[in-house]
Amino acid sequence: MLHHKEPSLAGRIYHYLALDIETTGQSLEKDCCFAVGYCVGTGPGPHEVRERGQFVLDLKKPSNKSWEKFWEMQGWEMRCYNEFWKEHEDILNDMQRDDVNCTDEGKVFQKLNDLIDRIERDPHVRKLIVVTDTTMFDTVWLCQRLQKYGYADLMHMRDGTGYREGMELDSLRHGVTKRMPKDDGSYYTNMRLECNNWEKHAIQAMGPLRPHRAEDDAVDIYTRFLSTLNATCM
Image (cartoon, rainbow, N blue to C red):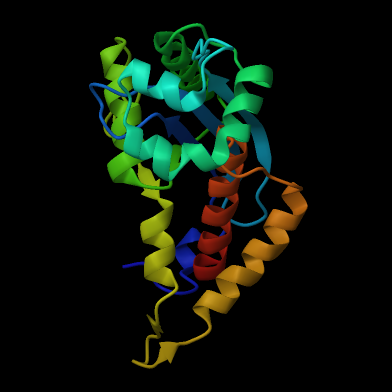
C-alpha cells in the first residue's frame, strides 16, 4: 500500500518511460496500432522531460476516400471510429500530414524497441520504469506488438536480469485520491486537491498539449503520474 509522504522514496531518482498508443480499435488481430507516443523523464521530486516523440504509421488513406469509408474498407472496428475518431478526424488528418515517420506497423515497433535499448544502455539510467494510462489496453497492445515483430516485450529487462517495473496511471490516481490513512488511524482528506495542485503547476510548465496526439498524450501521462507520485510520496 502506498502511504502518504512515504520517506523511503525521498531522494531517489528514477527514469520513467511514459507511453501512449493510438489504435483503430480493440482487436489485436484485426486492428492496427498506428501511433506510439513516448516521454522520457525523471522523478520523483522536481521532474524533467528528457526526451519526447512519437512513431506514426502512414495509414495510406486515398485522398478520394472518407475516413469512415476507409475504416470500413480496412475491416477496422467501426465502433471505435463512430464513437471516437469520427469526432477527431482533424487529429487523424494532422498526424497523417505532419507526423508520419513509419511506412508499416513493424517499423513503429522497431523504433520503439530501439528507443528502449538506447535508454537502457545509457549509463546514467539506473532504473527505467514504464508508465501507461491502462495496463489492460496500452501495455497489452505494446507487449503483443513488440513480440509479434520479434522484439523483447515491455515486461522483461533487456539484460535478462528480471521483470521490468510498470505503473498504471489510472489505478494510481484512483487509489491515492481516495481517503488515505495516517499512522494514527485518521485520514488525509485533501489528497485530490493536493494532487491537482501539483498537476496544475506541472502541466503549466509543460506548455500546451493537444489531446489524442500520441506524443502529447505521453507527456501528459508522465506529468500526471509524477504529479500524483509527488503529492503522495514526497
